[in-house]
Image: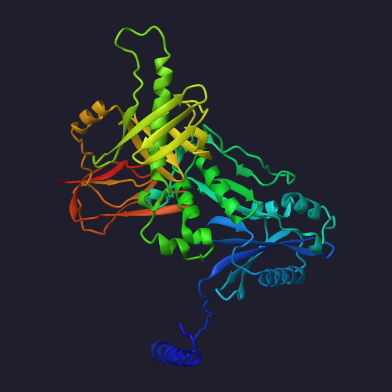
Length: 514
């Protein structure tokens, strides 16, 4: 890398010498280095009559492993002059090849807004809805009309730009397991309420979901992990980000894991909010993968207050049930303790007070120390998506009962953060502190499948001595091959799965001798 003429000359000379000494050929290849590169693409549309227009740009710099994660239009980075220059270059390219359809000209743009051609995608792209939102044009319809020989009904002067649009790719992958594919049955699939639809550009400034899956359907291991596209259109970028965060809060997916928590964390990241990012954003800020600790909630106490509120609402309903035997009435406690459950048994106890509960309006005041939350909601207790207001501001969260280990717990999800809680009376909370912690079983002697998939190779046999780092097995799912290696030296005791077998998450494949 060279930043001036002197460094360029020294580097060029050094490379030529090394190439000559190593290969007998001193020819070298020099490539432009782009500082803080951004991936920005221009949507074009051409007809058979020589007309080509550009429909502004899309910012696609938020990428993981060179795959786009979030797209938006317009870009928060480029100037109007750069936008016009890029658009004119894209149109010139399309005219030079007599292009007739929708297409995308992709560029790498440096921090100085110099731009360089990458490639042209001669098709409609996944992220085309954000362009439809800001322009009000139906790209699919226009493609069909152009293919039928019609002239474009618009000129460049007719292309407008209104508001801001963002798209999140909802993938069936587990962000807490290094984004490994997640397959299986969609036990629940309930996207947020839509106010925009495909093939209808008259309804804008809302939420749109493009998908082909359905509740009860199977997410197989043979295809790409994307199962839906979530698109929002706002008046400006801040409004679009807020709409997207609320839409993600209301997107219910159960049965398979999804990248929704990761999307929520990205949208809340200060660098993303400010627009100060490039294609290395995820690698820079999540170098060791994504964990639950990476989901920073702006008000974690609200999750505890919501758990207490839902428990109070449940007790109120139970108190209205008639015909109970003496002594089995459901007391309504004012003082409660919210116990945040932790996998290591280090549970956190938080005292709360619940005042002025009104079962008709669904309104209550929840106090946690000096913090007070006025919560009002008409959502039913069996609704996973819980909507209402807190201190006068609207919220959307997900509330449901816990898992088999803690069936009486409440699982609260909001803005990518998820907690499991028990809401107990003070006396029961004291007794809960005395409960012994049951550690999970020791699985260190086993090689477990990190993801659901097809076992395509088992490289060891019973009795075989294995060294750390040696290949054990290969699992394949959603166009991804995952090779498993031994973490320590050992002797294989048993091979518990066969080649060609479909594996579940954490299913044992190989057991080592003790």
